[in-house]
Length: 191
Image 1: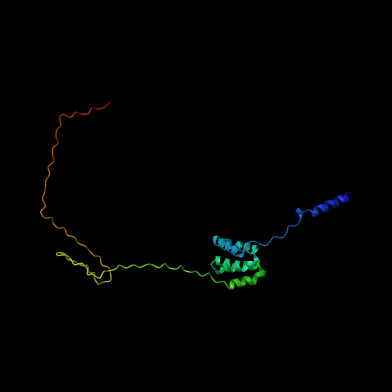
Image 2: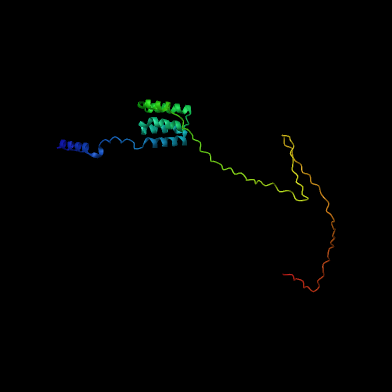
């Protein structure tokens, strides 16, 4: 009886669905483009954690090793010391993808920065009529300033002279004595 009971318990434990080994995880649903974009942004945000981020990306999607390496190189602006560290890390984590990683590094070209098209400026010029300039009226004299023919700048000094005022009359004002008001009541002091 004991052997039958022990056998039944073992059979029950072996056949229970909750205790079975887990099924191998499905391949990652993240595509290469999204992964590379996130890697680029994270390396730009914190360059000190570049190796850690690169390792995570290669573990998540090893098949994109070439694109991941290219994105990492772009993120560090192709700085030689960091590129060397990127290649070493990628070769350690994905030795099966060594040819893909090497090709990505050899074929890497820095992204071309396209300058924004310059805005066309509209140039407007004043239309000058063909008529002659107005002539000065009688008694008016037109004088033009002449600059010296020297290259250094010379300060222009303006001198103004005081002119006497013609026929000025002098008016002398005498102070008016105050009037005495006798009928005005005085204010009382308040207590």
